[in-house]
Image 1 (tube, rainbow, N blue to C red):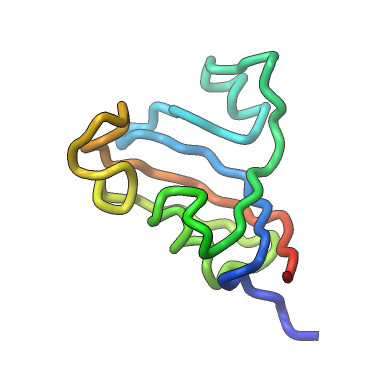
Image 2 (tube, one colour):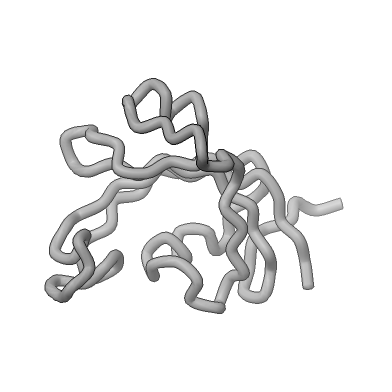
Length: 110
């Protein structure tokens, strides 16, 4: 069986760590990382994020990075504002360069 790679229409489960350049974590799906970075929230359910590729459920650079990944593959990406929350605007992350570490845990074909 060939290795399944993520493509549009697939439902991807992905663990992630989001950091600002310089290393400060702003979001993560991983409990251990949240604890380590001092942002653990006991009310949050730490589990992989589920994304249907091609549905624009996440920022464009995050979605583009997932295309072609396979289960258990890790990838580190740096997104300029244009691929994240935009160069300007109302979003608190607008104008920021963001770094993500991604780990695909599952790929479900439609």
